[in-house]
Length: 80
Image (cartoon, rainbow, N blue to C red; front, side, top):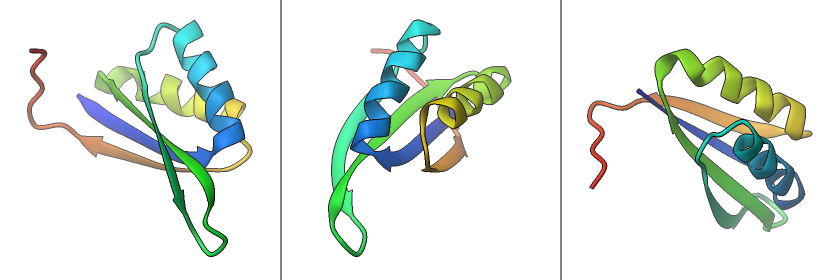
């Protein structure tokens, strides 16, 4: 299991969320601000099985102009 975190511009995040939903991925969008100019950013978080990480990365590349992406191992996952 992996946790994919993508930090991108607000404008790109909307398009990314739509692309993820169209491909049946569940995602959470968190509005954030940062950087030198404190511009609006969005952090999109997706939990996926290891074999689907490449599909997520492809959607991020297609949907955003620029993104900082982190792919992290998940040691434990529980749905409550």
